[in-house]
Image (cartoon, rainbow, N blue to C red):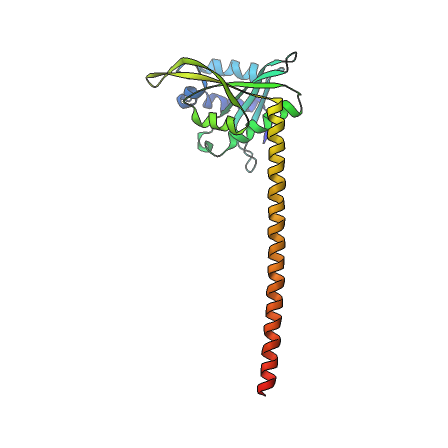
Length: 217
C-alpha cells in the first residue's frame, strides 16, 4: 500500500540510510549517509512541497517498510526518474519492491500521463534488476566500470519503460487474468458435473441395492 509520507517517518529514514548494506545498494559513496544529510534529504525530497515520494506500507500490518519516488519530472518531454528503497531488510525478497514499482509505473502512465520512466541501478544489485524487469523495464545502456565495490569495478545500468511498453504489458496481464478466470470457471463446472455424476451413480446404486433386497425377501 502506498501513501504520502508524514514527518514521523524521519526516524525510519535515519535508521535505513545509516545502514551500510543499504548504502552499498543505493549510494555512489561507500559510506552511509550522515544524520544531517538524511534530515536534509527527507525535508527536501520526501516531505517537501514538490516531492513526489510515497511511503510503502505492508497492507496487512500497516508497517512502514520502504519508500519510492519520482524525481527530475520533465513535463515538456513526459519523463521522470524512479527511485525505490526497501528499508526493512527482513522483508527483502517478498515482492514488495516489485509491487510498489508496478503501482508507481501504473500511476506514471495511467494518471500522470508520462511517456517515459527511467532509473539507474548497480549491476551487482541483481534482485533489483530482476524486479524492474518484471515491471517492464528494459536495460537500454550501461556506464562501464563506473562504481568501485567489493574490491572490483562494476557497471551502472540504465533502464527504462515507455508508455507503449506499459500498455502492452497491461493488455497481456488482462489477457492472462481472463484466461485464468476462464480456467477456474471451467474447473468449477467440471467439479459441479462430477458431483452431479457422483450423485447419479450413488442414486443408481441405491436403487439397485433396494431392488436386490426386495428380490431376496
